[in-house]
Length: 314
Ligand SMILES: [Zn+2]
Ligand SMILES: [Zn+2]
Image (cartoon, rainbow, N blue to C red; front, top):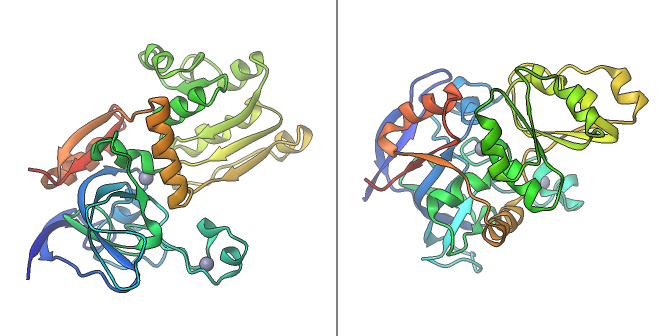
């Protein structure tokens, strides 16, 4: 039996452990991916710290995976060995619950999440349902593609918004990011250490949409007052503590707040294609698989510029 490396979390709050195990076989409807690279996401802390209800341990995390189809199981007609593919948060849907019957696969009552419902990308190989795969364009390397497959990325959000033609305002902490965000396409920058973001947004006319990628609930709550009438706060970051809102702020201006876990695999494919078309790229710090624990700490420290990506190549 061929062996492979993987990095798993043995128990809630346990350390990352580099282990060796048998290369898994793809069953009916499944595909085996030879993993090349994967982004470390703040949401991996849900696995690391045991914040996901019902999660079975040990678990290999990782839901920003780029690799190559290595083997296909019975009944998989649409994918063949050698194709370059990616897997994001969406890891498969049941097809028969009410959400699925309405065509909303990401809200499936039996949704599978890569690296949570089954072992994810911190490994040489990974098994996924064929429906979870997105095609990776040849223009993107594996380390470029991985981080594009997840929702909660601030420096990518700025690029996407700007390339899609929005008057884009970046909000972050500190001065240094100011020049950087202009290079990413933002027209305006608000430093929330020295400026009041709500006030500054209202001076610009109020935001139609605020994409909240931060992992700090207070910072999210503080943004609602910067929304224009009918403005929408879209929550893609996942702070562990509750987000608290003033009901009046929502009521008076008919503002709303909405969660967005991710799209499905075809949305990931669209994202990758758009990134090629518009020149959107993730800025990455790259580590080898063996240094997963160190790379994770780097991501959690908030000092990484901007994504920490692991590779399986030496
Ligand atoms: Zn992610
Ligand atoms: Zn379903």
